[in-house]
Image (cartoon, rainbow, N blue to C red; front, side):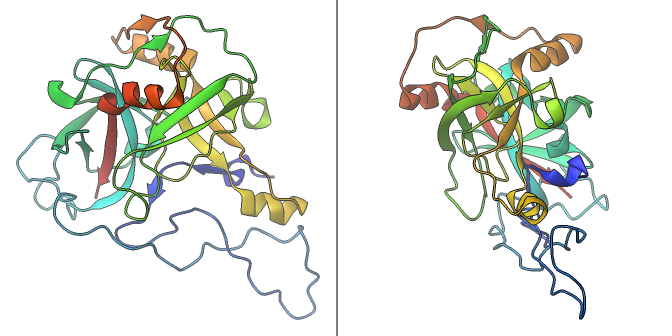
Length: 283
């Protein structure tokens, strides 16, 4: 199986101008005389589109840093994801959230829509460092102890399915399922916390409210079912915190490290909230 088609980045695509928001295929009718089964190639993406976001705050402001330049694009949001503040004026997200964007905008918890600028990105790790205004929020601490274990409780915080679900952030809980990702990718964790398009780039937090990873993708259940005949349950992935720390340090950012007491999931969400950003890719 092509590993790229087995993964669904948790980026929300196609809210404006069409596209497949879930990134999953719809089976094509079999040709006369053809034998159905998992040997068939992957089907095309469906043609249905999710509702567009209302006009207004999603448009960039020409002339401001990070906004579309006149004639450089439509100035409309073409995809969205999540990011979080890791140092004063610096936020972390996925490479695929900002890839090929003409500009990047962030919405902070207070509701302000602010310009952002990509400083560095790493396609292999699928991470990107973004410059944001100082008022974007306080930095989230990373976990000092890198010994993450299978079965540890984790929390995700982000903006899945923007325009379809709540306009505010969503919290989900789960566990570390495996210490490697798809095809034994040692840069990632497998997690059971539910992840949807739009969660890309959001923080994966332990039960003390410390960052242990960055949400990156989910297994494409429909395509796996077409190949195997079985639907996988809650198979999602996050870039390991150690990879995120290495990327940030290589780009001159030294995040805060902490070792804090255990908290409830609600308390972890309250820690993440002021630091988590709604990221918009402008076309």
